[in-house]
Image 1 (cartoon, rainbow, N blue to C red):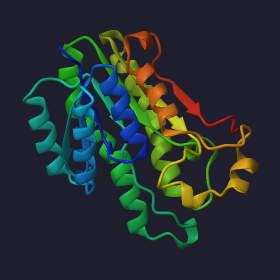
Image 2 (image 1 turned 135 degrees about the horizontal axis):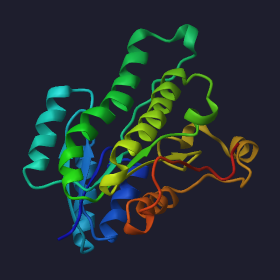
Image 3 (image 1 turned 90 degrees about the horizontal axis):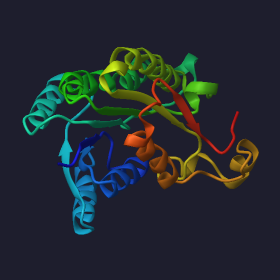
Image 4 (image 1 turned 60 degrees about the horizontal axis):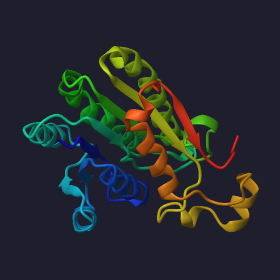
Length: 240
């Protein structure tokens, strides 16, 4: 029986690459979206046409009741053994000009959303004695970024949560890790970094690719990574 995988934010650039990788590795992939359900369904159709197993689901990570109902419905079909917390938002402003709504929304989706999805999946996962939880973070949580105090705070909190959760479930065959990408060429990041900026910031002088991030996630989600847990793993072309 294929392992079930849930990828939040699976319709975006990095999320879609992760979904394709996990499907290629034999997982039955649940592709989560909020407003981009059409893109998620298109991706699911593509994976199925290629011989994989996938379906699209939609709910808002900021809506506690919607999350609870969606996760309950997912668990009706059995436990999820691979969880990739990839969904996230940013709403940038320097701190003196940041509104309370900007702070709260970014924290709510990125950090509280992690809890709303991960917590109810844990006991069913633990009972199978095998699980992989991978959370997608950002270089901003490691070195900071002007205008992203809210985003950096949320992602940094996920690093701390990952370290603690990994200790709680390590003896149960469940690993918990973070992947922290640098500048990755996606629809969201391309307007923010021109070629000159990338050459200045990245020792490799190029953006990363979504499929490169997906390969790392695929490894961490596999049997081969059974002894790796509680780690924050950067994939950033050598950025400090």
